[in-house]
Image 1 (cartoon, one colour):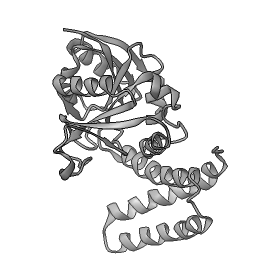
Image 2 (image 1 turned 60 degrees about the vertical axis):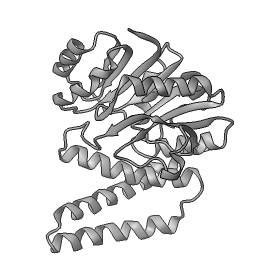
Image 3 (image 1 turned 180 degrees about the vertical axis):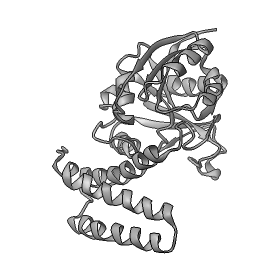
Length: 273
């Protein structure tokens, strides 16, 4: 039976076709998808499996996680939404448990499941069915749409990574709470929602480090000496790892160097209130 209280929102980017199997648990919900890889063939396959697609958009440009999710949230017409990624596995019962939590907790803005492959909880707390937490994993959470928009959604200055940490920092300072429902279970097959190639490796590594600098700048924790130190450190580490034939480590440090350059070129000029 279709649920008219919850929408599912999903971003796609170079998503492998076999991951469609994970989406079948969303058959009974309104579904909104933004494909930032512009894969027309994948759309045809998904539409065959999922009848309740309310929006399926394409973008030739990867606009990032924060901006992409905010874009979809603005198109939702239900009270609640589940933000999830294609490599998340969660069943309908767990989704409804997250919904129940938000529906009962008047100060709740977000509810999250227990993630089996990512310890987003402490074992000693699991004796409780529902309890407050201060952090979420952006890959899977349910939110009250009105409250999420009231807190200004994700900060779109973060391209990919750190936007969830920033959101939690703002929630912690607000009147709202994040609840974990330990009966709701999800599994996260990390980094399998996107085809692993050189381009995606660069996007992940550069934007993780760049996001770190932006986050520290926003919360006045970034010192100029750190930028100066790291613009020297990462090239040296890149050369060192190359000489001992650890090419992946060498390339990773090169990506971090590019992140420093990106911050100096663009990030340092971003204004934060």
